[in-house]
Length: 294
Ligand SMILES: *[C@@H]1O[C@H](CO)[C@@H](O)[C@H](O)[C@H]1NC(C)=O
Image (cartoon, rainbow, N blue to C red; front, top):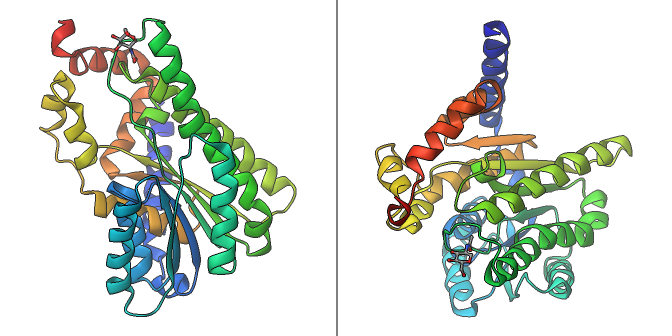
């Protein structure tokens, strides 16, 4: 067993170093569509692309926030790129098509599609109530189906440009996390879909890269956990800044990596998950118990 573990570790490290073969020059003039770009990691993804000289179309629901991101991109880009925004709600599948059309119209095409938006839901126990089912529908529309619709509408364009799809995922897409069961399910669904699509594209010799980004402890996600016991435990571990996570995502996409893990510290958890799943259950049961369920 240890030989396999070591082989996996070495493989992951090689993958990690590979990301440092990143050449920022290659991003100059690229046309990038980013969803969920009004705040958090999405916002920082836009800033990094702007400073590397890319052209950008960003989308989210809030127009004022998007305008602020655009003006910051303008100052970072130093006149090198074009920056546009379009407001859209990813709960509406018609909007996904409009967003892609708008990006092609304004930028003249798409080279990189960054799927990053999420519907955030409050932590809670799954009880099968009417409210829970409504939340389930919303979360699957926004966090799962919208990603597939956006991808499908961009596919011909990306194929023409030998482009890239970047899927922002999280540990919740690799581990079932209590009190965010539906969210976790939507992230697992994304992982399954894009692993399968990557293989289909390869089989039909379509040169589009798909990079799945597995994010761990990020500062602003942590702050949303409220009074849950998890927060106290996680705060003991140094969490990463959204800007650093965003840079890892941009680099991973640029080198056409299959998956990236950020921060690097998330990697050992996969060895536990696959070899000692009981240990993960035990850890989660300790750290994730919300105070009012105790
Ligand atoms: C499910 O619904 C109940 C009652 O409306 C609520 O207390 C709980 O937080 C909900 N769970 C989730 C996961 O939304």
